[in-house]
Image (tube, rainbow, N blue to C red; front, side):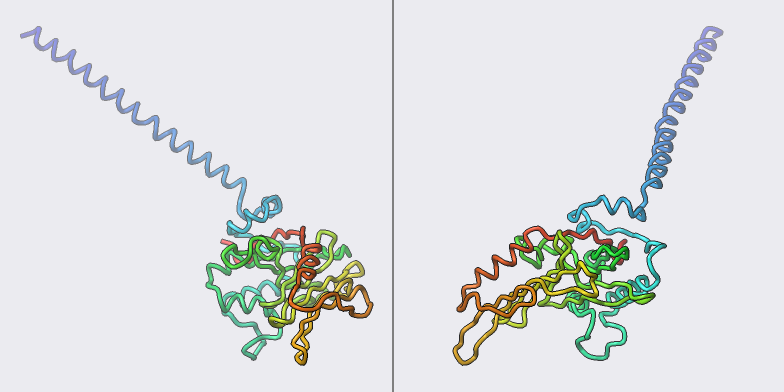
Length: 283
């Protein structure tokens, strides 16, 4: 009997030791998980979405696919902040403030995009950037639309992210002046040597391609090159005209063969300057 009690006591000790070991073993993963979460939170706080320097190092393709929740730079001129507020209003309501007409006289390109796109598309495609285009020491505010492969030809500049310009504002004293405004058949681009390029159409027989020199300031840009088509209703012939600088128009070809036009567009836009847009409504 005494021997049985001793054996029972020994067995009880083994059971207690086993329970203690299990308890200690179960605690380790919990402690490890807690430490990992804390480390992850600390790392996440080191790189926040509001870090504008991180955006500056991001290429156009990444910007196209990512929403950034960025605060408006604190040193941005108040006039530009007001412009961004207005842009957000247009994106939210689909209307341009102060415009009573069905089709507005300004912010036309943005207005058209708002009419054909939902909020999710607008939030992921409409962006802004501050760039000193004319190198006069003052940044211009650029409003742009990141390209959409489903809506554009990927072989054209319009089909590549970070190139298409909707609007450009510059400062005139304390006020923001709208100097460039695109629309559905009228797109703007910037070349790598800081020239503004306009590619537009007024219809099937009327196309134009214009290059502007902004070295004297974006408010004083001058015509550098102009290529456009005109249609003669009497002869039913389309002619392509070329103007160099302030010279006179000269016919470069007639008929429907517009290879010359395409070649000139490719010459100026084979390597357009990409803009690192920050999404206006990043999230």
